[in-house]
Image (cartoon, rainbow over all chains, first blue to last red; front, side):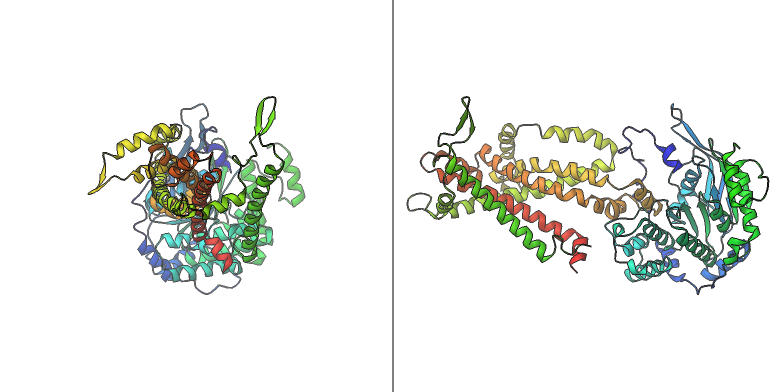
Length: 345
Length: 295
């Protein structure tokens, strides 16, 4: 929650101090229908069964054929010289991000990792156009971030589930579909499909407060995926989950992204998670938030064996080194790495 | 979900039993004090701590209930009918006043939620409005009302009463609903923003449903305030035909016919019950969760 720490404009009166432009666009949400129609046509294809295809070229190609959508030129996300300063000119001024350049290719899976306060959540919010940058440009699918948000070009899941507690689980998943003007039948079908995906089909009629935190989070992920977004923005979505569920959902997420050619920007605290999921891992440093290094991951198709492979551990080591800013002395078994973490970097 | 909540039959029976029990307890306290209390009131160091327990100050419950059946004046209608008719007359003012109050309160709340400037500018006046003494305000409203007419229909005295009821009742709605509209977590607002939902759709899909738990307590307060406003409004504007007038008239006869004024007071209480019942019914109908649990 590093953004929470830096975005609070003033502790006093923070409760009533809402972003005034958060909901001020009455004309928004008009150009929704055609994308919604696409989403309906874009039915889920049969499962690939155990093997999750990886690699940008293959996925981009499958995206164009699977959806019938022309592959638009340009990257999914393009950040150039992006800076974000909170409370500029005040004593509590915080530079959350400074000089960030990052490109997420179409169909690419990019993770953001770094210590608390490095601005990775802020970076995600900039892409989502939930906060405006104070410098540089943010472009999403060849559009301004604002336009991309209005065009519903992304799905988003936060660290907290953020479910509406007066809606059933199924109706929560339906919410974004409802706002896109889908018919009731299409909504219900899609919601059922998504709940099956996250293993909560039996809980469709429950209310959020009847679910555990992990289950709520899975509902939130189902909700983010329900709209078949070309870009997924996720802020530590698996943080509250148990390890088993976490690994299963990681695989499901990769499978969905592969099937739909979805690009993803994924904030995480977990090095293994970042390495397992990503084509590239963006390592950031704090105060001011900067990109330290971008670690490419070449693990090929993810299988059960991937989590035990030498390449996987090598990737983890490289990310860990980048985080620490110094090379580790040897490939770390679990024990050695605890000891090293205690030493000053 | 608990099946024996307030929606189930068992739960409903419990509520009914509770209501009956509370009523009985009230009667027992009344009659018990009458039996043991000093007819001249309980005095301590020259200060009367408890009221007189004689028949003039505290008539027997049976006597009060019996008074409903007796004629108002010699050979006239039974008091019960008169009280009921007066309550019905006042109910019109209460209902219209309450409805307008809901409308005005909701508009103010939405306006204050939408524009921070409006919240800063309006809220102090909304609070201030409730500090103006009603007794002072009522004649002014009645005076203003006399200069208006709705279409070809002239202004009726009960409309002044409704305005006074509105004046008292809009406040809890405006304040309660504003809190409710502001209650969604920032993350839910961000989510709606990410869905490119504009202000209106965020209001309909997020803020209003989130405000529901705040709204119904506010409506209950507003209902009670509307009843008080209407009764006091009738008294202070001198409007005839309502329960407020009846209370004043019967109070004048308190020395000769002490039970009579209590019939009028019970009529006013009945009004309050009707309004509370209406709000409860609305809550039942507008709460999807309770409906789901009884399915």
